[in-house]
Image 1 (cartoon, rainbow, N blue to C red):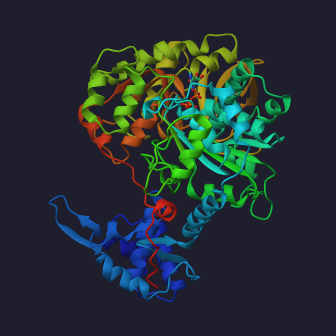
Image 2 (image 1 turned 90 degrees about the vertical axis):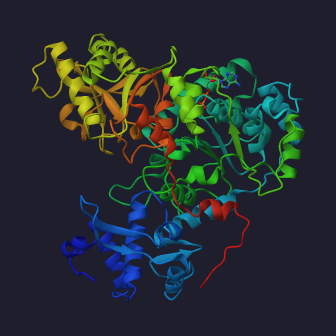
Image 3 (image 1 turned 120 degrees about the horizontal axis):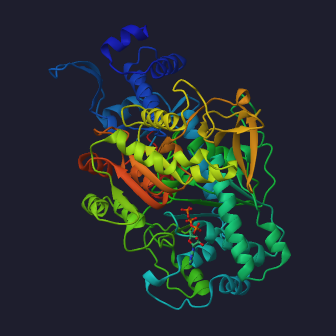
Length: 616
Ligand SMILES: Nc1ncnc2c1ncn2[C@@H]1O[C@H](COP(=O)(O)OP(=O)(O)OP(=O)(O)O)[C@@H](O)[C@H]1O
């Protein structure tokens, strides 16, 4: 084998340095420096991890040739051919890398892991199993609380008439761990607010409840939407002061809850220093990666209840794993007979039962209360999830208030036209809060950062147009009304990756204003700001957990591997009232066709009945 990375990549094209050195050092640690298959297995495993998988699925790589050099005339040289699954497993079986071993890699049921990631996965599986306890409660008190919160009308036997919001609350009352999923506007926040009220009412305890989300923006949104839902419930229902005061008014980021120790991987709260809480609500759970989910479970006290909330059709986390999609199977396989009977007794609905593996801790909300059923954004989102390319393209081409497809042609002219409508007015108001409000109403979303139709190019084009409009010299870096996004976590300033603010003339100098809720802003001098960038346009990835009144989505001119059904769905569902899409039919079709699939063992370990065959 080549001892120098420079020599190595002349035969194995595209191998990243980090994967090469990891493979080399692990093979050395295992005293198998000459074991070619082990080296390439770790190399592939490390690459898979960078691509978001939790492990390497042998079946996907077996009998393929990787890292070949391909000339323009399609002549192929170099590369490494992986053996068949049978031969590969045979070889791995000689290495004693079963879960119980101490080697830095683990082989289990067709999957090869770096041990750290096997361990994270194992922790999440064990935690879910441990927390999947039935909790006994007073059924008549629960029925009463459910009737108070949802009304009595629940005698229908048709699945379509079932109020799944009510079922979600009934289901969660008796579970230490539960998941509520649903698309945009299906009432997830409304439902969990009712759930928190119902828990406090039925158990009659002053619970310590914490609400968290993976990003500051998502936490801020959760604070606002739970606040609105709670205020609405308070107007409609009478519950004790203890109930209302237990439902928190503020959410925080998961990192803040766990207590970040600067420049350290561990959190202040962990298995030996548990959090002090009774109920944990995790919103936007699709964005939580495998290591963070494992660390969150690690820090929970034994008695805690955990409620995960999210949309499993959205893009998975940036880092490895697709925890929510793995643990919340779609379609829902159905409930066990006993759980369905309990839900029937509590709600009056006839709940579908499965004879296969049931998933009792999950409820799915499907009816959108935000979008009209007969068109627009909600309908488009549905066609995207189901992969119906033709129907989605037809919807985009129909004349509608909510949706429009931009004719191809003068791209920069189109950018300028939207900037004139939505961004030019931002610098006009006297009050910075009004400007922030105005700015948050519209956003360009792009699939990529680079390229002519990527975030950077759009930001530059709009920045120029605005400078011309405001008569600001073109080389001026920042100006009154210039929107910015922080792109690193800074504990000193309390600003975090993704925080959005605006540069504003305040007390006779340019400063940055960041909203802190309740119409308040925080002022910071520009010299104190952590790294930031312009934010007229954002990548779809970065907008996860955010929402805008109107958006314009720009897809690249040609298909790119980054495009997928999940990416488009995530982008489309950021819009509340209006969505414009700028793309060709070819790129749209290819994007909807492609699904993001991440390899992990979570689903199998939690839900597959088959015994885990250990070869070693
Ligand atoms: N059962 C219901 N009947 C009428 N309106 C409802 C119902 N449930 C929710 N809504 C309303 O629908 C809107 C969306 O609800 P909510 O914010 O709870 O949804 P969500 O799933 O959390 O949305 P998202 O996560 O996309 O922001 C809110 O205005 C809410 O008041």
